[in-house]
Amino acid sequence: MSQAPEFDWSILTVPTTAAMVRGQLGFSWSELAPRLATLTQAELDWEPAPDALRVVRRGTERSPRTLGAGDWVMEWPAGPDSPQPRTIGWLVAHLTEVFTERHASAFGDEPVHRDDVTFSGEVADAVTGLRQVVDRWRAGVDALDDDAFLTVGLSTATPVDAAAPFGHLVLHLDRELIHHGAEIMVLQDLHRARA
Image 1 (cartoon, helix red, strand yellow):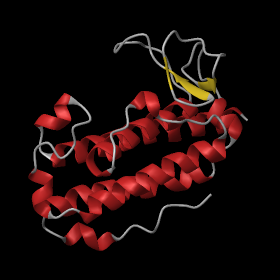
Image 2 (image 1 turned 90 degrees about the horizontal axis):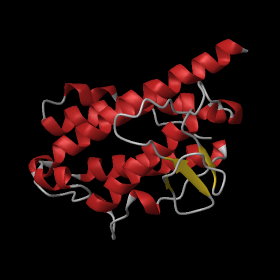
Image 3 (image 1 turned 180 degrees about the vertical axis):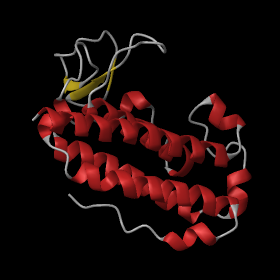
């Protein structure tokens, strides 16, 4: 699996809003991508607690609601305050669906809803899918001029996206990458410590 390109530290000296968001996104991805490149199938599947949310073959899910258009589905929590733990596989799938939906709305030819995203429970395919959509998202963000970050409605994936300047959405996806990436790395460390 390929890793993220080397982070270009010079962006941190550029005094624009666009450079700040691009710098945060690029640095966050450069931290997570090498860890994803070492992810094993056992780590992807490991349930850190009973009833953890997973990515499983369609028909084997434990959750009443699932997302996914293909043979694999991600189990979805019962509600927004559900305390269910998540597997690394679930976290990778969640990042994949978030970036896919937002990329399609802002830069794609046609909108894609999270229910239409194809997931995989195989580590190589899951990581490749996430890497590809994050790379597409980064390329789209990098191609924007500074004014686009203040444009309202550049993404219409959600009502909040449609009402906010695009820079807020980029920062939101940065936060998703940062906090779910941190969860992935902690779960990976805990799984390795068990061995």
